[in-house]
Image (cartoon, rainbow, N blue to C red; front, side):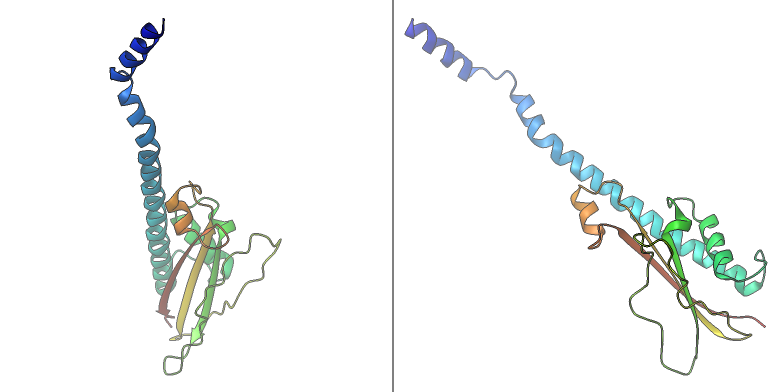
Length: 177
């Protein structure tokens, strides 16, 4: 009886059935986390490129005085969101800052961007000034949004302390007369 049981244990130890399953169970989660991290990073990169592009297109329209009936905060924000096709809830997550800058003076634009505070009901417009003709303008857009895969290592690394991904785009232009 014992000899039969030991024989079965020895046969079980020598068989290689299921060895591939063990490798799959160990390595598959690592591959999935790597693939999800690459997808997360790709989406963040695409959204950053689209934010830069949409800012450039809208600022070009402002400079040339086309396609925008006025240059108020909400109109510019809507124009940027219309150009951006990949950001979810763009108008809720985007905040614009624009100031008139003296070209011969020191830079008085804050180093840290003011982004949307989603915990508040209403956030007032931060420094948004329309300049006169030939005025140097600095405009910064800041957007915060949730990572697509927050549990992956890439989702945690691209997000800030609040768990949100922050994208900023800054541009300067001269107000045409």
